[in-house]
Amino acid sequence: MSVNYGLDRLRFLQPVPAGARVRAVVVLASAEATGRGVRAGYDVTVEIEGAEKPALVARTITLYVPE
Image (tube, rainbow, N blue to C red; front, top):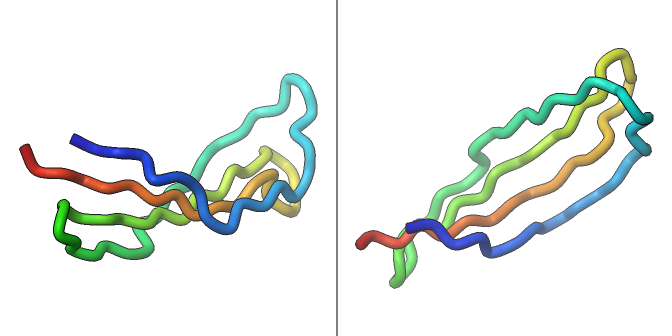
């Protein structure tokens, strides 16, 4: 089971124009064993096709709990 712990360091850098193509790049940034399971942090970047800077950068936190 996975539990969404939320977002850390969320930044909206620019708006996405209607009809623009976007893609998300997700990289595992950290993994830490806890008493309940494994807490993982992912760096997420949402890129806009043809734009110099991304639309969004954030760190998501997820807790993976064994069954």
